[in-house]
Image (cartoon, rainbow, N blue to C red; front, top):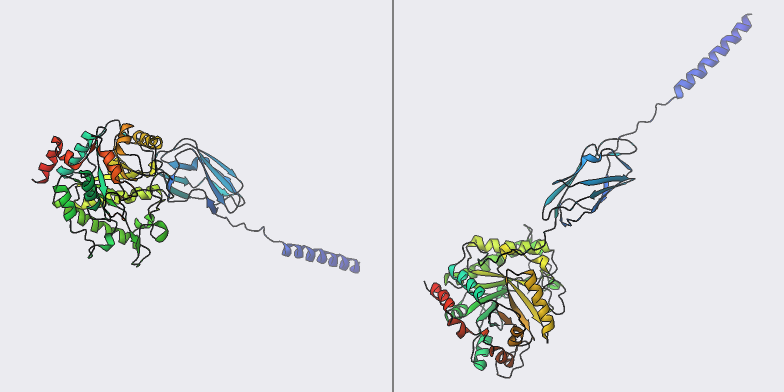
Length: 477
């Protein structure tokens, strides 16, 4: 009996030990740590510019599979209706209506919208800021014969009004300085045709060389002489910059400099410091002309595209060519605003079109006239087409032929109904100023044929016009 009880006790202890062993081996369920959804890629990054206003898909990719909990927590401000779909590691946000032009939007994936599918927590909270593209240029219904510059110099406004009074009926002839700051080609044209052109076009291209023994923009004798004798002053700016920070080599060619338009606009860069230095020097020189009450047809930063159309422009690629349209326009407007701050009020702002580059147009608030550069067209067909397109794009602006070479004579162009406010053939630096010189852009024969047309105005013809006498009177007040 005692033996049997002993066996039962041993059996009981064995079972008890087995039970205790099983209890000791039990582990609690693993703890799953919550994982915040991690974005690995997105089709629009915060700070993006020029986003299309058209309905589009915005894609957000995550590191792990996500679940869309509440689509209403995904919003776009200003408000635009959205369709939101989650698929594995991808969140697709579809805008269902067109967004507004030139507007800053905030895309918000708010708390409660998306969770990590495996852990179900915590919520993602992310904002993406972007700005939409500027809208297409829409010409106003009415022409405003008022300069863009606030409170312009009266003589500048009078000249602008005078140009409007002639537009479509006559054109001002012009010639470009042989280098930058001379009247050599104007004198050459007069010597063999008996007529001075009206517009003398200079260039601040060699700003970095002035003052020097060969060039001094601070000496305004050429411009003052031309204005006092009845001419109109135009100044281009083919802006040359250093090849790199600290370089003494200057260029306007894109391939020869590290400078970019974007960096020009960014404070703290060497390009920005260069920009401010150059703008100051140019403003100082324009104020010298203003003190003499000389208005200026001001044509900076000509051309924007690179490469240029084969038929438009000379084929050179300037450092501002190919910049983002928003950056180019910002640079133009920066120049405009800086000159206004400095009190420069004698400018008629002329923007150069390449016909297909209207997205670079700075805007009516910053532009008074549109110019075209045009080369190597022997017949009128293509010229007519380009002129018609500019008339369509800018029916409220005068259009000039700011620079050209190897075109039909001006009497032929006007005979086809093309209207230029003024025209300026490119100068030829090889010109020996003889009658028979084979000028690369406009020979003496070209000029003689052009001047036969009474609509091509010479300097002497312009000074006889009654409306222009008001300009002269204002200049000597």
